[in-house]
Length: 99
Image 1 (tube, helix red, strand yellow):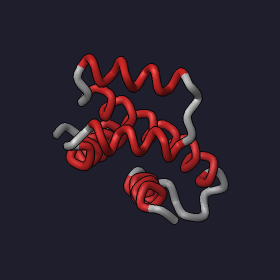
Image 2 (image 1 turned 180 degrees about the horizontal axis):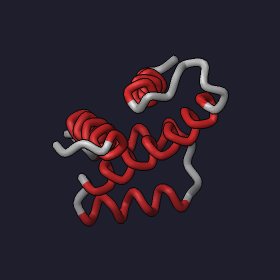
Image 3 (image 1 turned 90 degrees about the vertical axis):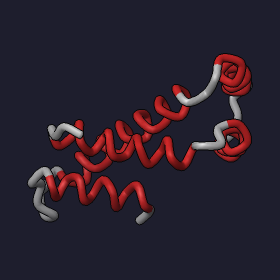
Image 4 (image 1 turned 90 degrees about the horizontal axis):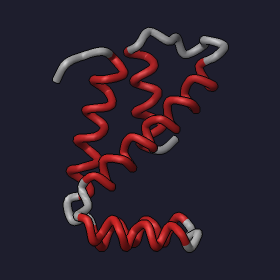
């Protein structure tokens, strides 16, 4: 189980979804997709205009995941802070809490 899977599992537990709930796996999968989309959106928001244009051009070529990751690592120097902030924001939104 990776860090994001663990994060999602904790969120579901905090939300009151029991570990043995019959739909927990399905809920975890859906929540993981939403979380990844949310983080990706925040990473793109952290890019300046020319970087977004280069990123879009890269995406148009149908790159594999390592190529996308390498681009982000080279072009978003604060990516770890952006991702950490996105996790906190997502958690607060999912649990209905204010920051």
